[in-house]
Length: 112
Figure 1 (cartoon, rainbow, N blue to C red):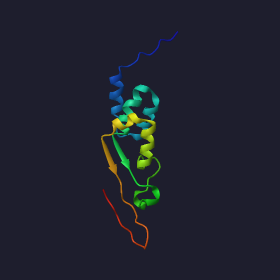
Figure 2: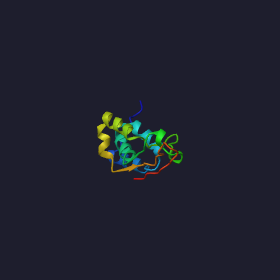
Figure 3: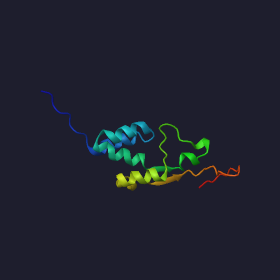
Figure 4: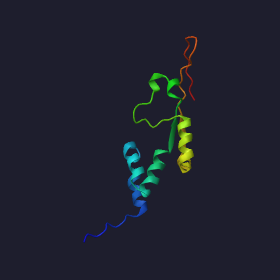
């Protein structure tokens, strides 16, 4: 009969996942792997939140690409409604506000 693998101390899992801070796909996987890795991965994933306008208002160079983590404030609000604990992980918010002003052929840029 095989023996069970002993559990590692929780702080060791935290240390391991912390080394992945720049590897977003792996952090996403860790957030789904186990309760221990979920909390650490979510802290890293949501430490900085990027909010952007709706796609139809964005200038072309700021259009999100597949896998882009930036979302609208409405998207983030819905996430917080479902998972309020995520709000406590946010340390900074970046707001991308580079929109095309439509009408009468003029184009304006707004930055925050």
